Image 1 (cartoon, rainbow, N blue to C red):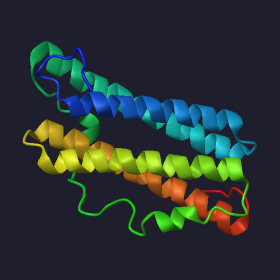
Image 2: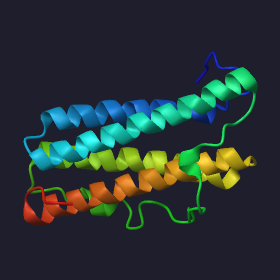
Image 3: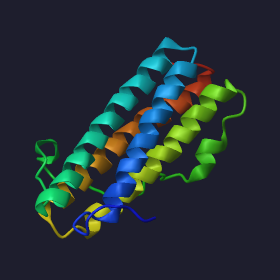
Image 4: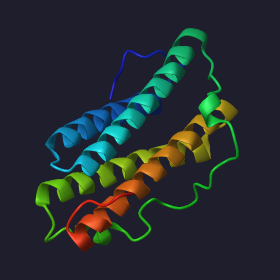
Length: 169
């Protein structure tokens, strides 16, 4: 994938921004389509988080393009995160139990889980290989956020599959 970004901007940031844009659009569309107020609230909350992530990534892209340096994000301060584990500890098999629940909402949850897992794996990989503290901090922060999103979505998915509807999370 070719971009018009200066050499100082890693291609992974362009990909990360695109993933966040895709997530934002997906969650907004899912919120519009779900019949459940609880589902709508969850999807809108995830859309807000994706918009925040997109702004954080854009801030890094702008700084690298204009000044050639990473910006330490206040949001990324704090203890490091354990990124040694993949987000799919049980593999895809657990996601394919969607038979019996409302197909469109369950399918939305499965797609959302895949989206979050892809973002998590990207950020986890980049955090582990980052050689700049601010870059590592940003990737760790974003990986932690995506892991939290994944956990929320998995809880909603399991509730949908096992109990046939949305529950308080």
